[in-house]
Image (cartoon, rainbow, N blue to C red; front, side):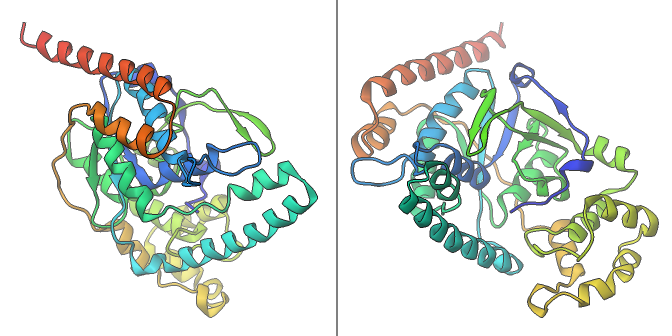
Length: 346
């Protein structure tokens, strides 16, 4: 679901060439969901192999990342661990949304409404355990580093960006990364200039969001940004506070400043929510302020052509000719990287 504060956040468009030589921590689950929802057939169903197993995530991992690696960008994929108990409400809402989308998809299918089928099919996605497992295997076979977070992947990515001096930014479509303290957030980390949606084509451009500039622009600090997020609604309190959007939330935070006073001001509104949607702001604040993270080392491995072919060609029926062409690109990228490392010694 993610945090909805897009309208008040300053950002700047960037070219991927500006990221050459930089290391980026990718929110893995967020990215895999993106692949599953956007890489689809004309009727909206995901790509599948001849045994009807979904392969959209593998296609996205392989082709998107080769394109990024060819730009000289180093990638670390950070995977979610155990979700906090407070996120259960979001999981329930997502499940209800999938059930409704399934009904709408079947209705569109009966009417022969291809646009409707595509629209609702993209809402049926679910990231299964086997998808996560084979995604990790493919990434490692491509020489891309992976990190297993103890809890929220975007929290771990934000933490690594803060403590590891050689990581430039976190990459995610969600703004929660900012609440977890990511110094820099990249959205739309892709070479695509346009993306097809169920309503038509939209222009896509990579964007950089700098946390320090966000706080300066909004004239608040990080604790106050966390409060703003809670007011609007996070994955831990998806309904937020009734009648408060992002601009109103900013006004309240700027006026009352201290977390206790901010939530004292909206106390009655929170109590007006149905019992299942009410929340304890201190619990949520603590999750963002002190998330479950660990200081962990990561490594970029070597390309394993045999493993890549086993996953894509043998197991999932990808075109061997197309995979071989991309493997040549991948090997070329690896050779250039080795040469660059050697040049440092001379």
